[in-house]
Amino acid sequence: MTRIEVRTYLDVPPERAFDLARDIGVHERTMAGSGERAIAGRTTGLIGLGEEVTFRARHLGRWWQLTSRIAALESPARFVDEQVRGPFRWFRHEHRFDPEGPGTRMTDTWEHELRWGVVGRLVDAPVVRHVIRRLLITRARALAGIMP
Image 1 (cartoon, rainbow, N blue to C red):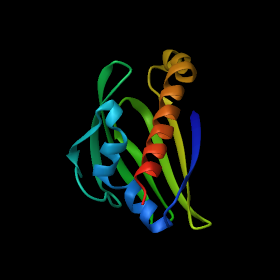
Image 2 (cartoon, helix red, strand yellow):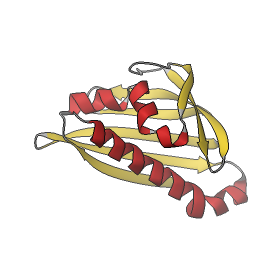
Image 3 (cartoon, helix red, strand yellow):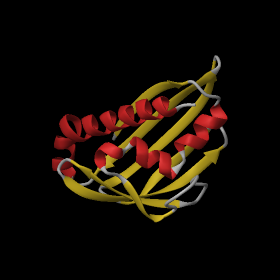
Image 4 (cartoon, helix red, strand yellow):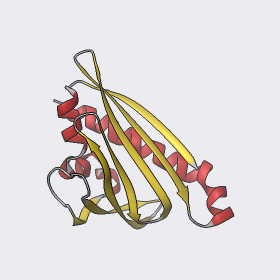
């Protein structure tokens, strides 16, 4: 299992950060570099508990589709999305929003396991882990840049 954690300060209260982080349109804007688009399930607005979204994006030179479901939601402290269908054996992405000074400390905790047995384990550390960490950082920086 791979675990990645990224912390970012956002200059807005937790309630605002929480809503921006689960807004499908904001997600698409912050992931524009990969051409990520919501194509099924909840495709606009704020995703809620039990709802699914399918994204299509280009990573590592090819197009991927991934469907995730909001498995936990505690406004405005945290929400968790988990893969329903996609390239991973499984993933879990927890988004936490903790008050810090006048703003919010957002913590993304991503855990995954790849398919493909030994081959998956061999490409995880040098390739997939690096790509996921970069995506989390890029999204967090873009999210911080659109605040308030």
